View (cartoon, rainbow, N blue to C red):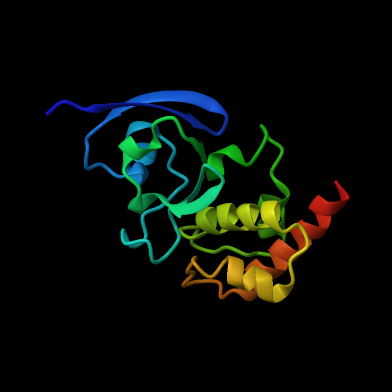
Length: 158
């Protein structure tokens, strides 16, 4: 079967790939492009482990077809750091021990980045609501919320 040719922008870089019409964007990112940050936790959009930003909208990449990325802009967890310089959210997740197994961490980081881009000074309730689409089975959520609060403070001062 012939593939669908797609040209898109991922983390600021123009990317072209071929995919099958029924192939998810998560599978394209991981299997075709080697961007393995987004994880498949559920495959149904319930856990948030595969979260990305697609045209400034937080989405679960397991629910988007790879072909739907044509002409669009994608942000993944791989685009957060600049070389060896971690994004403040990544640094604060480490400092607050807001991760354990790591399956959910990329999705939480992308969701938190999206939240802070839209609301740079969120309350604890707004953080919890903004991250509600992401599930963690290891850490609980308090360390994650504290890491996002701390990162928001750092990012406001930068």
